[in-house]
Image (cartoon, rainbow, N blue to C red; front, side, top):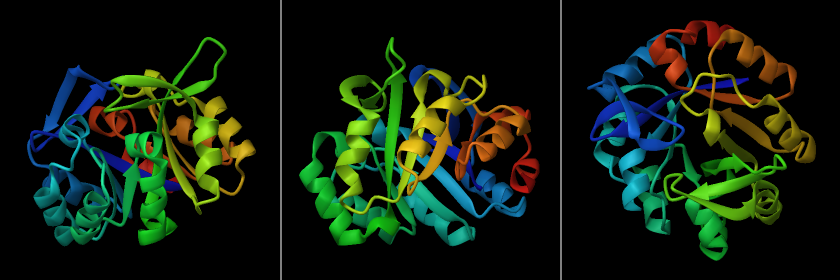
Length: 242
């Protein structure tokens, strides 16, 4: 299982939101580079970064900081937030990002998303599905920094991009994000069974080591861990040993 410690950036600081709400922000550290070094020293290989300012503005806002992190630590960076153009993807990769997360763009502009896959290759792109469950338990995709929930289901989006070579998807259950109530294992397991050839990265609700063990037992290949690390309910060393 791939473990991605997470850094969410707002105003150059490390923060966490509750259920994606910008009015429910907790600031954990003033120096993201120091946090990234700590993750690297703990043995991490990957780092997931969300540019929250970028998600609201519609363009990457943290390029200089990302470039500094990529130069300072031997972590493979996966970055999302505000990616709306081919040039945005190019700028992030030039800054040292290994994988770029496409979220809102993939819902709004399939034609441009296809060009991005063709230009940079599937090993450079992770599809980001931020979902809210409806009354029947069906996951619908949210866009624009989780401010708008569309009528498009996660399955519709995945079916669309499989033919383009999609091989990795990051799925976040917004209702659990930042709440430390445990991940929605059933959701990820359903997606994994429906799309066995995809690498599913689970995000939202991580709390204890048991959460990771349940995801691993369900066949999920990766997990994003944020607030649990900052609140101390789960250590990165424990997660990596899992």
